[in-house]
Picture 1 (cartoon, rainbow, N blue to C red):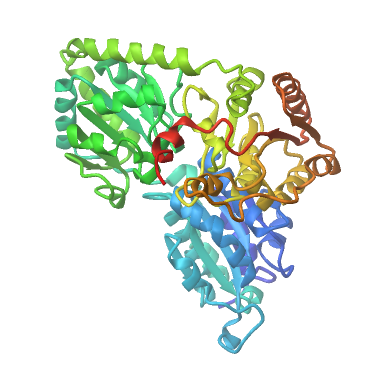
Picture 2: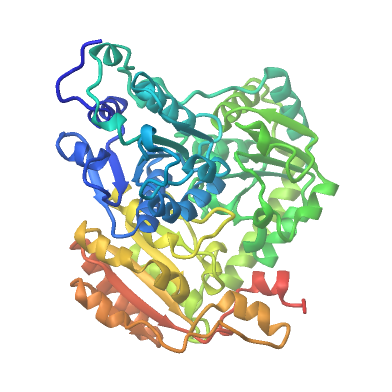
Length: 570
């Protein structure tokens, strides 16, 4: 086979990625002769490097979560892959489409103790949808196309490819490129499946008979263009109370009279009552993981439960469903709406009491939680300040510590499109949200990206501040400085002990912010909040970072939802 002079696997990969419409590469440079270097020589790909692979994988995640497109993460053998694993684990948990590509030990010296040799396939296999080592050059382009297909179809997730070093120097045969798929992702994928018609009619019948129905949208409903409109139309036609999971926030305007925020650990007590009063719950595009079920799982035993998801493994995993439908969220909602329009007698006459009840709960929760002006509630106050100063177009990147959980609770923090939140999956890796905030800003330059996280998480990922400045990403980092790891401290306090939770020496946040030309403020009073948020908005509009240090006591302003779930233990 005649080779194409100078065209290597990395060159071919760059061409295929551009053809597929994948334009963003994330990573940390390695030995200097890999995919990043090949992409640098070719127009059409944007390269975003970090100083730490953990930040790079967070950037790739954040970009994919906000844009809905797959992201390519470039890494290297041994410690490079090991450093990425925390983020890959989180991406697998959160169903984020990442295409991870690495060079690897050459084929002829494999097993002989080569530099940085490791069995990375075995390391990555349990936390990816698909792993593959390219052993022959004629499989290289097939492997990349297969990786893209696997990452975006069914339940999205990370995939892993590795290319032995000796293959990367071979010139490719021209015949290999003839077989390349010239269609972009936007032309050919992903593939969506539709639940069977008979099952949708059964759900429709159950919905018309229900008197207190609820619809629950998960993260799998993000990036489907008509889900919001269809959900609101169905809710108004059938009297549905609308909930989301934490990862589903931003699909529905939470100011709608039928919308009640997220379920699980984060649901305020006034709203949680609706979940126990329901006689029908339809959950769509959610894995129903542990935190999404906290505090109300027992409600399923007294209601008719319908579960719709694109992947069969998400069904019957944590809760038994009366109806299980395999298929795409939007196609299900489209067909349910079509059937509703065909049967104009479906009406909401039997939902009048439920609609009245929803109105009562909405008024109650807004009167109790929507306005916070008490200095004793610093986290809630800063969240309300974000709403007032930055408006609707906010992407709130959240951690999963202790105080920041207030940001998950409507209406303490209200989400309205085009704003949304970006939250961790079930693994909740500390430090990762720092990189995720960078990727979110890359995906949506017009958005006000705000990362709300604890001091422990910030210190595990603060190299992201330098990368944000280098890439001119205007991001506001709000660090809740409670003097250490407050979540384990909270847990230990119930046993009357404390070890390893309190930071004796703290990072100089002011020096860090100013070293990259950013804005810094230490917040202790409400007046300082307002001034600092205004300055942060102005700095980020100039593509500079802002770092706000919100000082709280570790046991101050504890989320009520946490106290309800854990406060009586110990």
